[in-house]
Length: 572
Picture 1 (cartoon, rainbow, N blue to C red):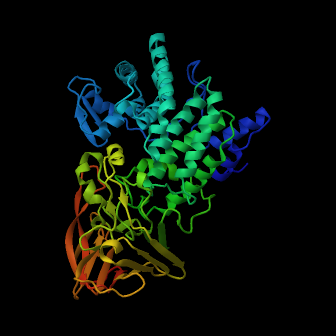
Picture 2: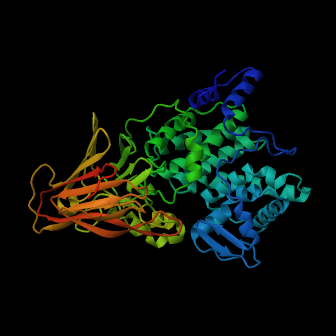
């Protein structure tokens, strides 16, 4: 029999079979290519199944820990003989990862008894120090959710051959954590943290014996939250492409838990998986990584590769992502992905960036134009600069961003950054003829300057030429400003790309790291080559070059520019 496609496995998993033999066949069909779900390796009275952890482990974590280093969230803490629960956390992200126990997978990957003993000791220490806490980072619903998922997924590692006292303490702690999360999940911040809490509760209800009665309510809450957060085109309501990877790493194992327990897969969960995978493909450039929009930070290459492997070609590809507000133009080897959406709802916009009408472009596997991305937690001071419009490949008017920061103490207290609002009106149309043409506009500058930014992008049929037009004018008529306003159109080059002046006025030559060469020319503004920063690096912001088209507008201005790939061997 031919191997079932992902869509067929999901459909079969959504059915309730009456005969035990059929149920077993469905489980086996859906498990591939994941590892088989198994009964726990030890006869656990409390655990019915042990979920799979799809996140990639790093065995070197144990080696670092042996040398007294505990590295999380891009920061390393020197323990100097102390427990990681005793040292001062360098930042909030480090503390959250510590209490989330995702590092259990790294200790298990070390595959030695000393690492196992250390994991047990740390789990027991956490139980003694924080098991009764109802406040603080350890008790935050999303942190508690990640910890519960980690303990369940690595239950064999923690409990196999454990002495009765250790076994009892850890399983009892799991029960208390479940009770705490069941009563606090509604307090989780809107967006992924709240969905993660419900995912953890569903994992627990399926994995732990005696919780079948609670599963109905937990499942109903999960389905309702999926309906809010996963958009019809498969994007996430925050518009953060990276969250699709995190969600799929959670939801794929969860869907298999339903199958392993002979439970009907909720329709909403199956639909989310069917739509999220094509959306993930839609937002990837030629190098295989996600475009840097609205919260995408240092790339999780392993996680992206893991979930992308489930797109086996059986799912229909997206032609456009209107609900999420992204447009993709692809011709030849060239790919352009553009942000043509409004900011997400206010409560979920603290990670969003002011990059409306910005785009990224790749030439085969080489990146050409890329936004700044989001810095790692260790370089959080750069986050305001990374969110600004000037860090994106789009137009900046009067040295201000197209979105406005909103003072909101509750959201800022939880997210650490203010939410954003505006543009309010974004319109776009994608014409997919011989060449791909995107027409888009936004009103982010209208309230302050009575100006609308319109952009036209045309990618030629062979992918060798990208023509652009950026226009500023009033809404529905000409506007004469009281004073001329400066504008700048930014084109941030990929790290490693070199840029120099061309032989002709207002031209530049770009040489990509792999040797590809592009010529950039402009009319209607003055071309400058300036310094820029790339934020999405674990090592912190990295220098790079950018092309900036500068000018002033009196109320109606049009700038045209062309980026064209030079044939190999061309000398300029």
